[in-house]
Length: 260
Image 1 (tube, rainbow, N blue to C red):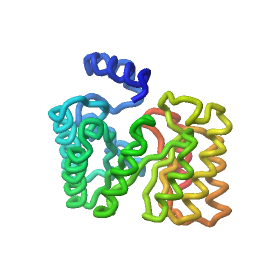
Image 2: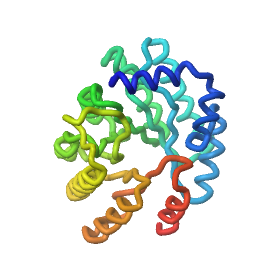
Image 3: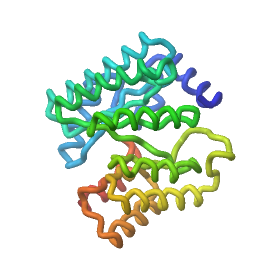
């Protein structure tokens, strides 16, 4: 993990949940599972699908990782119990990727088996660059056995287009985002427009190869360009969706939702 990112994560972990919520409440549903259920019900009532994410990453012990896994299982149980139109996202280091890859794999298998039993879906988030190779390797291994697993890729990384070309043959379900971690210039684009251009090039490659894409952005420019690309390529609506963080650009979110 990048030292700066690690510092931020470790600082946040030292804060009480109530303090974190004060600063982040616009962007998260709450500090309890019940808060997430309530918000997802509200979104579903508007015709908006959701993904639930138990915040946390960079755990340092197997015990912490097992606790995170159990929280993910509880989320899946609650989604099923309340008949929510929602799936689950998780960070692999939260499930033990940085501790022991085989341990992490077994934990993810347990989560995916639970999701499969509920006919639900799990997306593996992409974290900072020290974990990119391990995350892709883990995803490929899981994809051999499970169809209900997807992955996130980040447009600001110079390697991502190549990664996508290698993943497309698997029939991958993607979330494509810009990326938020602090990365060195040698491996990431720093120019704002270059990140946008790479985002669109990656999106075109995904759609050309027939993969499903969650187009994750709050950038009006990218939304407009994505719509244009989808129209020009005659992409059916069951091959893509737009994704946004809770509490960010709700007017844009509602406009996209109204457009179907």
